[in-house]
Amino acid sequence: MYNLNELSSLLGGKIKGDKDQRITGLAPFFQAKEGELTFAAEEKFLMKLDETKATVLVVPELKEYSEGKTYIVVQKNPRELMPLLLKFFKKELIFPVKAMEDSAKIGKNVKIAPNVYIGHNAIVEDGVTLYPGVYIGQEAIIGKNSILYPNSVVREFCVLGEGCILQPGAVIGSDGFGYTKVDGNNIKIEQIGRVVLEKEVEIGANTTIDRGAIGDTIVKKYTKIDNLVQLGHNGIIGENCFIISQVGIAGSAEVGDNCTLAGQVGVAGHLKIGDNVTLGAQSGVSGNIESNQVLSGNPPVDIKSHLRIKASLKKLPELVKRVKKIELKSKDDGKS
Image (tube, rainbow, N blue to C red; front, side, top):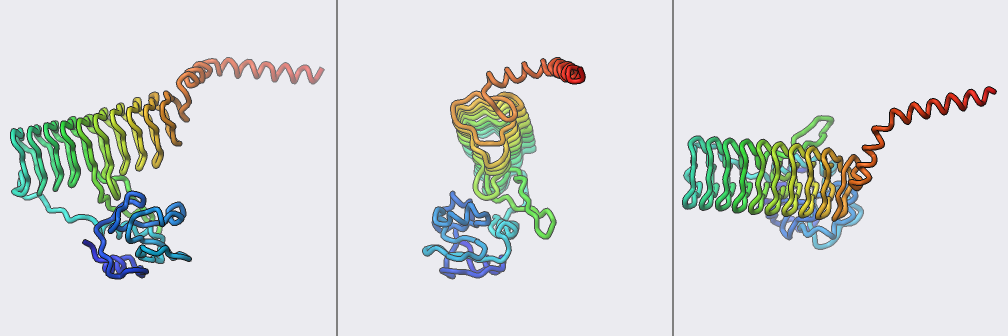
């Protein structure tokens, strides 16, 4: 439990509501539960304060305050206070002491190679295989029969479901790319969420999946992600997806079930891609995409249109020559 008065003092705010309210944690606006705290900075959230289940909200000064909630009213934009807010809620990390910490829990029939680190209060379930150089952080959970190949990393508090596979160099739970401008300077925002891989997920070599800033980054069951993919913080990838090499998915993007993103697809942040969508190689996604489509290009169009556009481009130089000839002829005709 966290102390409301302590947090309010840290943020330089004033409490409106129950000053004795205890806080269980910090959560995103729409995912917050009763007892948790969230913040609202932008107008799109301030207009929907009644839609969050959070008990405590950090807000700028408002004309009206809805009943049934407690507010920490701050003078600065709440987003500028995020570094302080997330640092306050960040769990304390215990520095590594030995290769396998005494508090780690190891299941039956676990294979552990040399030079593996298993952190404080980490859980490694039955049948797991850990190759040399694997790092498992504090309180991380590795599900049954998972295989972690050399030099793969599962950072603190992250969760792997049953039967997951990490290829060499995969990093689960790296910090998301989260910064905010404070007095003109780029200030780091602590990333206090987790990564959760559901069962039978495979992550390719040197792929990085960033932990959530607040809340979790989630890859759902049976999804397979290729080498050299970047998934930003708080992204959600649906079930049974294929994400091919060099795809980049920005923070808070959502990809539906049974989707295929071919090589070098780029997806902007805070977008939603529906179920059963296939995106051709090097597609650039800058808006939401409805379900049940096969698209390609930047911006994506249906695959047949994309192929016609590509075929037309080959004819473009000749078309330019023809247009110039027509323009010259038109000028000559005008003179005569």
